[in-house]
Image (tube, rainbow, N blue to C red; front, side, top):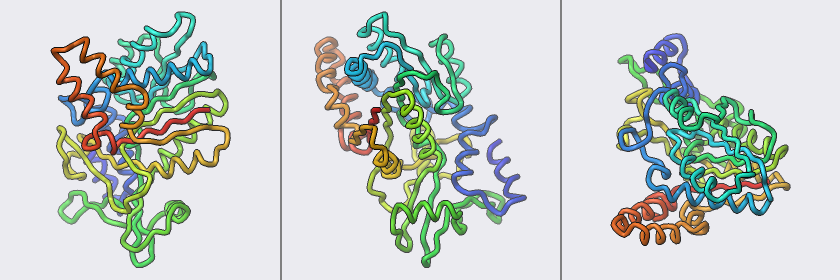
Length: 342
């Protein structure tokens, strides 16, 4: 199992960097959490916005329709990064297939590593294509959808103590288990942090080279082919300068070093690092806002009202779903939306 692999590695090595630890526990080909676990839904570990309400996907579909109409698109890739059970793409396609002309062709693509999800997605969408690399798609106008995708990518945690930069690592404890510790930061980590912020002693900075790499791959593809990216995740622009590492199992917060390979380990996405990439690209347009603002601007409240009128017996349920998506005490403020169009 994953813990055994880690302990075996740590018998030969003094420690493993935190991002390498995340890469192993999430993506190990045999027992990685995102490869083998059924993590989404009431019977899993967490619930995402598409699982809360169909309105989430319907609003995204309306946004896609607006972009299609504005650019007179006739043939495009619809790409979802981390589609999971396919709930979001089902809701999006239901609206697109109803509203688009039959002459407009949709080529469906997924980046997914979970074995069970891939199997089910193939059954639901026989013509879809799967990809292990971001950017490995046909050359045409493309829509990228990434909902709660980048928070699962490996990330680094940098600390400054006595004017020295350290990184969070995992070591083997004296009793044979796993424990957190720090080691002097890798050169590239220190250089990157210094380029972003003047970190003070005892402050913590988190960022994800894998997420930065993924965004660059998407932008490079869109530069060549034109398109639109919708990235939704929980996070911030102004770094809190403290640890945001968290783990969850069966919808409850847990100890990060428990249930290795059987629970979700994540953090609050550092959107400032992503926006800094976009600011250097003069040829694209981007918008950054809260999930509440994005959903409201694109008509979710009006959609909820229509659904309530059509289904009066479910009106309270629909209102509860809407509240979970847009209320600041729930997902509305914590979740952010980054839109990029080229």
